[in-house]
Length: 295
Image (tube, rainbow, N blue to C red; front, side):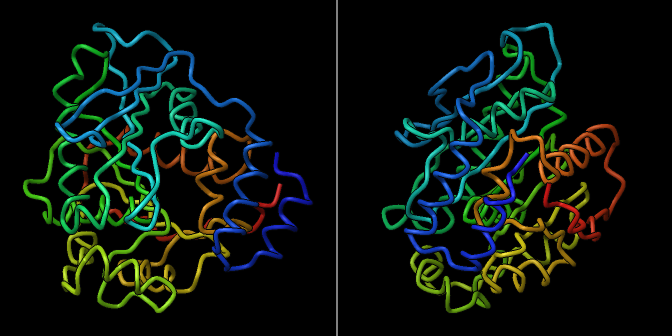
């Protein structure tokens, strides 16, 4: 449950995502989550030679051959210049791995190379490298190489979208579904709120992922937070009508994964449905999440 005073704080913060607001929201949700670690965690699995090309694997049971569990690969945000797969002080993004493990999936949380040292298409490349590594290791860790869910948030969603558009090279097979939350898909039309960070990473290139997302052959969850800056609504609307995480900010939808609330439940239901079906053509999910969210 998310208490009424936390929802009230998010309403007061509105669409702001200044460092002070982000810190306040992280503190609120860290307290709600408490320790957030899956029963089994394997740290620092390399998927490339760079020091940031690393994965943490989270599961409810030992990571060993013999099982065939779906795998969820989570790609964090951070404005293209920051962010991390885990925080040594707060539960982010171990909470995402623990949430995945609680549903019987292997949760893989990845770091990736950052701007300004690594510009477009480095993020999309790293998503492809990580998917390829997961598929290769699947027999040893008890994963199913043909049931992989990609989940990107903010800049991470931009990198997932870039991978799906082929910006980072060959698109990896074995995807069962995609979750994109509050991402950038058409950098040339990004609003002033994020223009600086977008320009830094993309360097003015008009490299839209929208056509690829609109033609995607696997289920796609396209989401924004109710209190997201309006530019993220515009980015999503170029693909389809997004689901709205009612009451949430740009960050807190992902912070809430692991809490017994509506957003995690809705995303889990979408993923379970995607895992249970073979690809059937264009299946973008267009319904909004209802505002009965404030539990």
